[in-house]
Image (cartoon, rainbow, N blue to C red; front, side, top):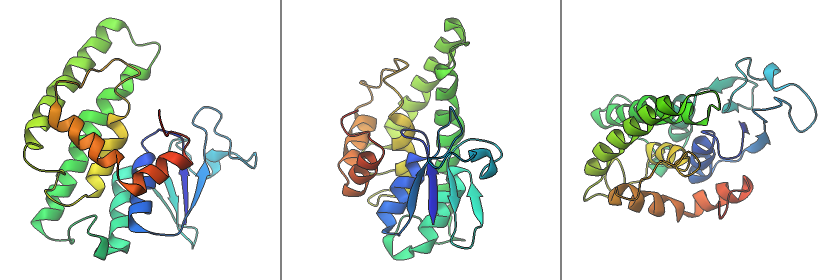
Length: 203
């Protein structure tokens, strides 16, 4: 398998999932600015939408969209318990978390990195993020991970997007459970390895 990624982007989520699952894969740097691959070829030939992540299977089949990719990875190695079994209520809870992170957290961060976005508009998104993280902080009270005692692919996704808070000045210090979760996920060996490969250790 190949994972096309850009350092620190949301592709960090499936990168973490692959390492947590213990699966063999090749990480391929795909610049979201130049859209060129290390060999000089055009990334648009891999993903016509131009963004990451893309997971390429050994038979050449490609999957886009992080929430779909991480569930596929989890289902390849069910013994790792990265996602509950398909068809169970806990699996739908996982999908609920992935949808929340994608639509309420990930999507709200994106405008903050747009240089053309007026500061007044950015304040709206910062306030929205504060509201969502406040609720999330309550949901994490008394449990180490989103689904309870076990790390899941939803935790990796939340971790990847929460890393974006500092550059656009989104202050999460008041959300002690969120910050404790972030530190807990950071300390996981698979996460450390993903950060190392992407050149993000200490950043």
